[in-house]
Amino acid sequence: MMRTARVAAFFCAFFSVSLLLAPSAFAQADRQGCKDYPGISRMPNFYLDQCTAKQFDAAKFPVGPKDKEVDQQQEGRYFYLAYYQKQNAPASSMLQIIRNLQNAARSAGGQVMADQQGGNWYDTTLKLNKAGKETWIQVEARDDNYALTIIEKQAMAQDVTMDARAMGGALGESGKVALYGIYFDTAKSVVKPESDPTLAEIAKLLKQNPALKVFIVGHTDMVGDAASNVRLSQARAQAVIAALTGRYGVAAARLKPFGAGPYAPVASNKSEEGRAKNRRVELVDSAIQ
Image 1 (cartoon, rainbow, N blue to C red):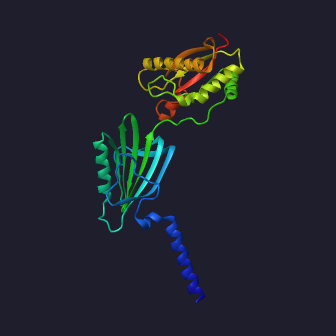
Image 2 (spheres, rainbow, N blue to C red):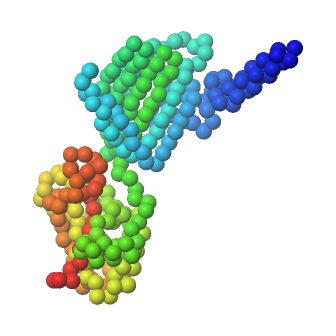
Image 3 (cartoon, rainbow, N blue to C red):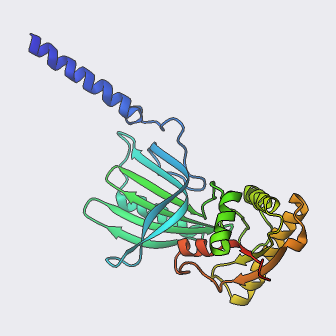
């Protein structure tokens, strides 16, 4: 009797935990707080069981012809969505799921970047470009479920700002300091509002060191022609000076703009990570001038 009672208690506890771990699997309804990615409808008779969203992360996407795929890492806003087929619903094959999403991507002007199939799995990589936003999607289809891994490609917003003290230390040690907290839209020279914390620290540095004069040097990646990038980097350097003089009261005589364009890279321009490092503003001590 005692053994029977222990067995009964075990199964009772097991099923209680199972219910807690996967409530939507029993309810056949979307998990609370989860919703479809905008613009991508789900397969009929599927419910959304898992979802994750992050402001910035990376994911690897297979790209290339069958049996010759290579993984390409993309970075930006991250989404993960997992769908399961409802019980007693008409079955959807893996091929049906994959072809539906591939056709939807093509109809939106997208591309199929990879198409891979195994014994009990079928994956595809899709690439969309709408309104200037590049979006990568990996679809992983299985017997009764499929998952979407999505990256809205973008550079990371720099949340940690180098302060005036650190800037001064770098200038004293090497005569220059690279800043990644000054933001512009692609091919634009208007300083974005999220640049304010870094601009404030530059102004603080100059206020604390009244004799300091600096070049504001703009740098770009190698995307586009070199001459256009030089002009863009010069315009960005001038925009930074305008912000420092107009909003922070820095004397214009202490600042000189220079556009280096793509001619002083600090990383390879062959990857997005390298290009992001090359897009920067530098302060260069001009005391010797």
